[in-house]
Length: 178
Image 1 (cartoon, rainbow, N blue to C red):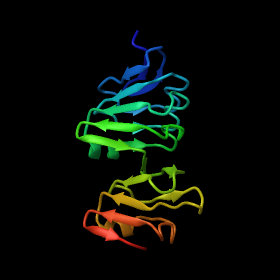
Image 2 (cartoon, rainbow, N blue to C red):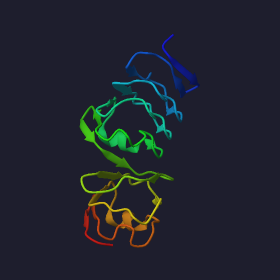
Image 3 (cartoon, rainbow, N blue to C red):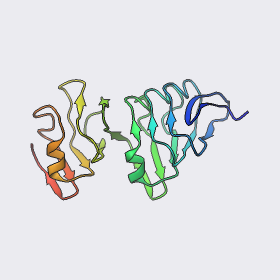
Image 4 (cartoon, helix red, strand yellow):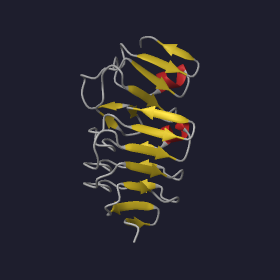
């Protein structure tokens, strides 16, 4: 037994003492609480992965947990990551991709309510995003990298003045203030 409980292409639960996990190719989704209370040191994600659901890695490892992805940084950013996918307690993690590393990112996608804020946090927004919902009005970010153009950024539905003091880096230039 490999410790993986599946429902077709969805990884439902992982039960094993092995702290190094290589999720099989073909898995497209990681279910909520899939790795709950599993002591992990390293997780390898397949290139077939499309979504990581809320609390998938809840209470599963300490800071420094190593995540590896079989695709590029750009492909990783397109994976749908639900709120608290890494349970927010993993503040010192890296995503090792085949073309480099990403660290301490915040990923915004359709329907995601995120709660990371402050200086030094890298926020990546894929150009497929159509709206951004915020949990509270007390959020701020120094900068956001948007995969699309300035016009596409301005078309995203978001609360007025939500990014008033945020530098938005777009594919065709920066937006200093909205």
